[in-house]
Image (cartoon, rainbow, N blue to C red; front, side):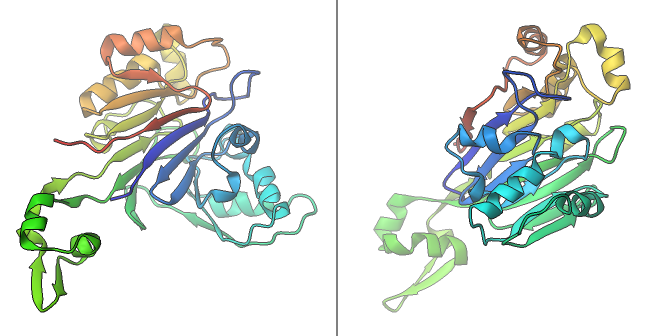
Length: 305
């Protein structure tokens, strides 16, 4: 199981940036892997205010190709190159990603010192990454758009007292957890002999932009964190849905039905100077609703149940 599982909100607004709010960009660290979820305009500058270097990003997941969700990539890629990056950069997104990003990366004059690998994900699929999986879900938005579910691997919980009684070397416990069986000084140790049950892997669902969907309740089922489109309050719900978005009240209803641990409101319309009304409406439905805000970092703890 990854040693850390943290979320950093680098940008939380939608449509266009405001003086106090950047465009969609969320850093999800799973162990030693740094993932960026969407990359709105100005993301690299937002990251410079944080403890996350844009040079450390391994993977970028783009929910869809409306400008507010991806136009920060070109500037960041050029900055990576200027700063001597040699490590490959992986970018994942829905249909159209290869064509759109190939055109974007062809703009202007610069020298790229590393490889960019763009992969188009299919809907309703699961993809393997070191230590976690990513599942996709088809959103309801005017352009091809997808949600992502990041699921950490579940692991066997080790009973330390049993391990000591049996004489399992401490330095080889993780090896035993991985392999299920090890040999040491002529003895065979089985993981089943020191197991204390399963430690469930942590999970985050990130929706990007979407109308409220019944299927999201199952896709986000039991997730530790749901980061859902909450563009407006319910006073303009019909218009919000017409444009392919969700209100905070509707997102909270999904979070409640999905039994998630926490809902983070996200993708605020520029019409809101603050999000008090959106938060109030969400908490009326789902008390574990929190506003995402610039530079907020949240650590997902391992559940002990």
